[in-house]
Image (tube, rainbow, N blue to C red; front, side):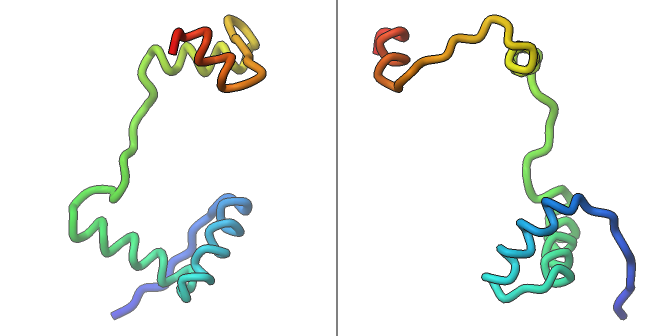
Length: 84
């Protein structure tokens, strides 16, 4: 038996994902069924889902507010600053 349902998805994610599905020869429905099959089989979401650590959250906040941010012109400059 098949069940029809509808979902609301972000347009940009749908469009980008659709390109990948097309290259794999999958329809959107096929991809959703693969996801659901993995959930049913593994009894979990088939990728890691979590919240950022407090430190990572602080760093993201700093970037968003342009506070305590160092910008380097090259990887070499960054490595020199880190002593690598």
